[in-house]
Image (tube, rainbow, N blue to C red; front, side, top):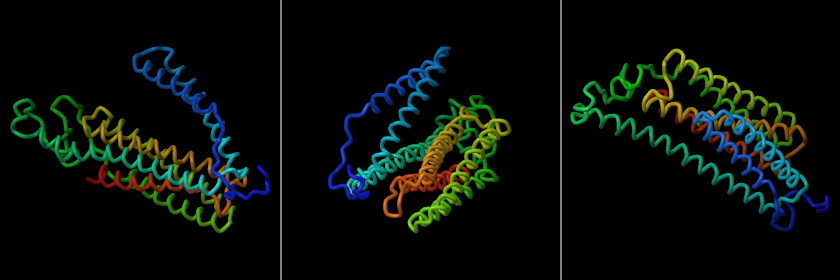
Length: 294
């Protein structure tokens, strides 16, 4: 490919040649799944299998993404490739919407249907002391039959969840400022606000970790605390995992910006990470209202 060809002007749809990366990545994930499955069964070698698989997988991802970056920076990606990337990211985020929608749906069904239904007169014969009330509505209610779940206190919106909400909303603003700076070809400003965004995401994760410590140590709220505990930790835990992924994406985009990658006209790598981050923001707003306030 001639260096004279401008990015986005390649006159064909670039199709990469055969690659070892998919098979090598699957090899690493095989050991992760094998080790995880045996770990829960007490096998001593299982943690080492998980560690080996993760390290192998991460090395493969570094090589794979490195190849994609070199292809992009050498001008092999045309406007058609750009459109394909946008559709791919859009469908990926849609799948994430469905993912979280399933958990929100489980929370809704448990709170509105399952727990009240188990509290009716018919089930009182089986569980005489069962309260068909959601734990956030009635103090002492566990949403489980009496004696099955240890007493716990629910997690309210103050102060950590509200602080985390402010952190994510602020990060959405700083990311938008960085995007507009990139479009205006103000690279130094873009990098500065990207680092601020990464920092805000990191602080969010630290606060989330401390919130879990408070839940276990002082509220006796655990993953085993009935339907409330399971839905609380599944929703907030998976969201926290997505924040971790989003923070890593923004970190790598920032490092690429410092290397001179992306232009005001072509920067979908940046935009894709921004789409994902804003999606994470929106999901958190739903969590903040439904999990902590209701």
